[in-house]
Image (cartoon, rainbow, N blue to C red; front, side, top):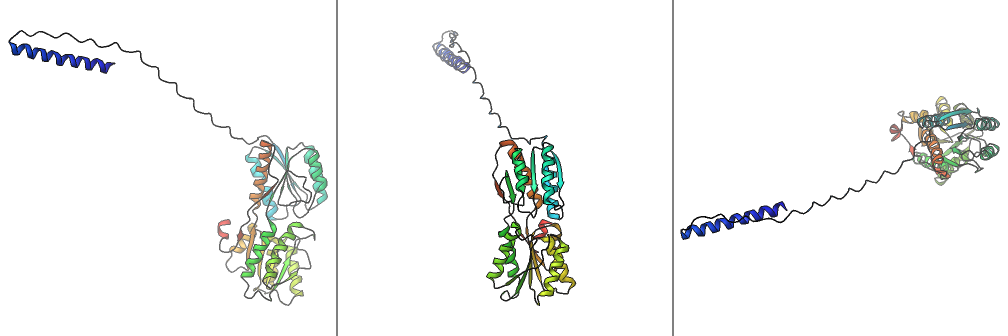
Length: 347
């Protein structure tokens, strides 16, 4: 409206000038023109209220204050120790309390540890069964107490658990076996020794050996199973290798079901002066990675099952269950093949 008024005043001014000019031309007196009246201003329109911004969706928070148990059949090796440490560290980050158990390889003690944990009223359990295939009584007790349990690494025959996270063992064995075949001067007619962890029915070991055997036999490599189990440790792996060297006139390649046995077998071959044998294994322990990174080492490859990734994932699965009441039952992890060309990035 203010603009309209200014235009009206301006028009009146032009009209006045025009009239004055006309009077002056006729010799008459100048007379002022009448003022022009502008239209009344309209009431200002209220500005629209701004729309409220949507509130952000709430993000799930860690369920702080939980108390969980970490059940271990054994902490004999870097691999199992790594999972135990990872579980403790991740649970602590979430503000949880962790009670850790170690049965020192005694499967009967595992049941006792589970019962003790349940009597404490734990909210959840992470369970590392190591080399034993099944824990039906322990899992039945956990289920009866309605406590969620996540199995890490060991996939038990009894599926009375909330979730499992671990590696695809047969695929790992296949890949390591093939890598070793590719590094033999002449695979056809070569001899491979496989050192198993035991016992005979160990499903993780069976899967790894099945994969490696398939790769060896497809290339014409003769496979010999070590007469002794390596017990998943370096000392017994060394003994198993010594016995096989005494038995066989020629060994070209050795595959072990875990790194510790392989390190022991490598030591046995080195002490015997048999430095042409090549080695491969599974798990990717720190000791194995350091050996593979050593220039000239005959430990060529391992399938990397990162125990820290597995342990952390086990706790995260529990946390998801606490938040939602439901999780995916089977959760495999990637297990990259480590060799001299890439191991430095995993050290």
